[in-house]
Length: 92
Image (cartoon, rainbow, N blue to C red; front, side, top):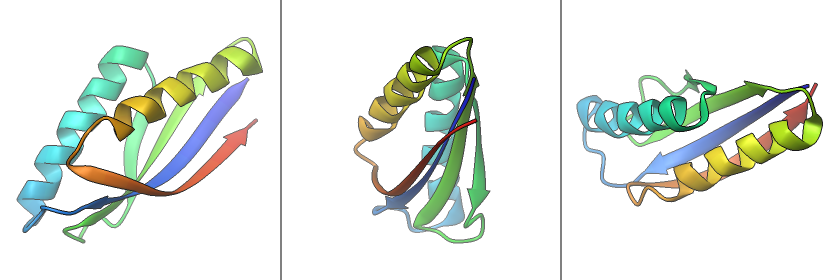
């Protein structure tokens, strides 16, 4: 089972691409280390205060895949530097 989620984030205190990249890199590294998921920025690479990331995991059951994605989303929500907006879930 493959679980996929796409999330848009607003980074309020970012004043440059360098600020954005530092926040994004910290979050993406933590997600990869803690949950062993594939994660990448997929849109808004040249915009200072917005980003869209995709998180993907593969598991033997839909429940465990969904649990990993839900935990990863909780981790992204724990960072005060940004705010999650539109979120799209898919199970394949």
